[in-house]
Image (cartoon, rainbow, N blue to C red; front, side, top):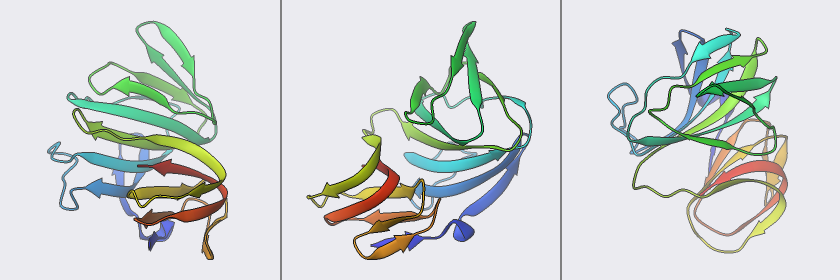
Length: 168
């Protein structure tokens, strides 16, 4: 198991706030060049309105962690839930309105790459598929503590005690 503390995330500034890159594959992937298969990040959104960047050839998933986020797509008003991911295509024109300082969790995956994701609470994982666990609250992976918004990378079975996003 590899633990990545939130203080160690690579942080970049964008026109709407700050993004913390949690994971990118391959490890030498490049977001700006769109040279990656999977990227997981969390943004702290300073602006109350923003437009999503074009990620043609990718599927996106978003989950609000703190504050409220509403998406606007094709004249549709989509308030996001704190309990489930919203999925959309990377080339769709999407605008958001949110409370200032809202925090989100984002997954961008290249077409042709399959990911399974969900929010889990007190769950036993019995196989050894590679998984990323992002702590939504302070939690435990077996006997290891994860603080809120820390990440664990695992390739073995484990017991989750608490609430986390799990990406396979």
